[in-house]
Length: 187
Image 1 (cartoon, rainbow, N blue to C red):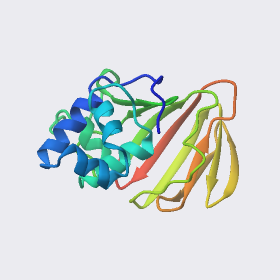
Image 2: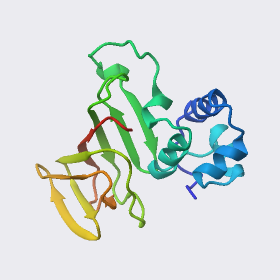
Image 3: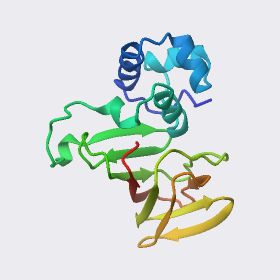
């Protein structure tokens, strides 16, 4: 279960609740489908906790949506994403800024900052999609693909199938900045 002490995106819970209601799901139905407790979903929808990437992904996929749909403000915003208008997802030592427009479907690019010691957890995850490419811009990243460890430094890149069990961690004493490219857009 995610920690309650992490920064919370104040609107994330409201957006999840609106999406759940749009799909005419009760909180109990969504919690069961996403394998979270109804109490946790309630705290999330009320802005008391912030989900991990895995939990957020399970919640939106249980509704047949992508994570991007939670952050969609203006699907007709065009091809330019201004720095000041980037959609940001913050959770547990990680901040993802979505660099591609809301309507992009074939490609998604995230600029990710991972705080020192932060990780995706000890359990590998996988998700729908084709491929991912991670480019380390600053700092260091450890990536595990199907149990094999890869140590990456600034300038290194790693590419893999989205359905490969993977996890990551920032082993350094400073923040790590990455570009995360996913096809098709699924976040």
